Length: 251
Image (cartoon, rainbow, N blue to C red; front, side, top):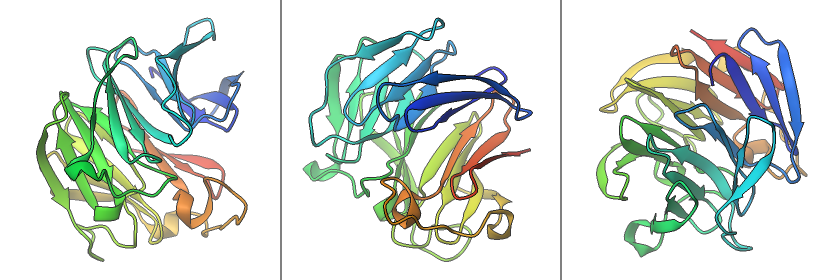
């Protein structure tokens, strides 16, 4: 969002400049599970069961209705025309909504839904398509705005080209020409082209703090992934390292 990095920090949004300096903090009424921006720079967040928008005056506007007690909205993406996509790891579906929050339908492969852990279900918007990571299948998938699967790539592998462990990648983001992934376990950040060909490894395991497992943390430890990623308007990759409580900006 312009020159800002927005971090969801439990019951707050924290706004930083790309040089690391703090701009402001905004209290939230409930823990924030995901945050993104729309094409106009507006901020969109999810709570466990509902979507909300944050206005320029820091007012919070709930969008649509609750998705119920079994929902866990751990991913959010916004299309160029304002349509919303909410990744619900609790019910293993992706909800498709119009800009006002009215449900248009859902994406649920095979009727049984996606293979995802409850703590993370990453999605992003790129060039007219919804990009979805299905960690349990070690895949990246591409959907139309209407929910039609048009491509997929990835696989379970210890090579750089694939994704290892039980559930990877734990986070994704995109630039106009690339998909960026983050993995737990063998912690790393990688860049792929739009067709799924590995372009480069942006960050290796030795660039991150040792893994810390917090037994009581709802979104921490092995289950939580410990990394998140985003991309700036000028193409830099921002990595949130939860174990070290720091943000890395990669060129």
